Image 1 (cartoon, rainbow, N blue to C red):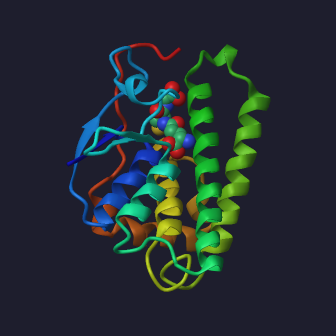
Image 2 (tube, protein in one colour):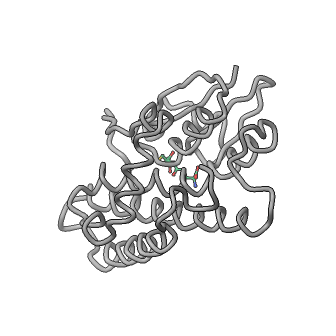
Length: 211
Ligand SMILES: N[C@@H](CCC(=O)N[C@@H](CS)C(=O)NCC(=O)O)C(=O)O
């Protein structure tokens, strides 16, 4: 059986969990804290990050985008990407923006954990601009239709949906729901799906200081 090394709050790992669920692929979930000295992530990924998917052949796949590509290749049903070029590329573009927002949010989160006198305001503002711009772009792609691309659930919905909930979890004061009500409605709709409900992100405590 496939094994997924994951963390409870990770929006990147959640993308993979949702894809596995939607495709009906059984897997064992291993919850890790990648920041702790006991983490097994460096054994499998030279970049020391999760998610990591361990295949039945013992291969370790990492980087959420690559894992999703691998799943789409070897478990094509149901597809999460359209066969046609234009909707396929649009979904990938949405994923690029969603991942970019998450990258900026992660940097912001760690900066906010530093001593207040060591925090860099210009750095935090720079990341915040990326979040604002990215969220605006996502909101522009969410329309009146149920899904972001075409008439079926897919990669774009996973990517945008996971970043929305991560915002709620880590930045509850960030007013994206008021600024972008259609995006908020999209997020609510996604969170009702069984795959989203089964992977609700949660804070995870760690015992060692993050360096
Ligand atoms: N671009 C990567 C990002 C993964 C990532 O940043 N994972 C975090 C957990 S949310 C991690 O493992 N961080 C440990 C580290 O950066 O050393 C992906 O999409 O998989």
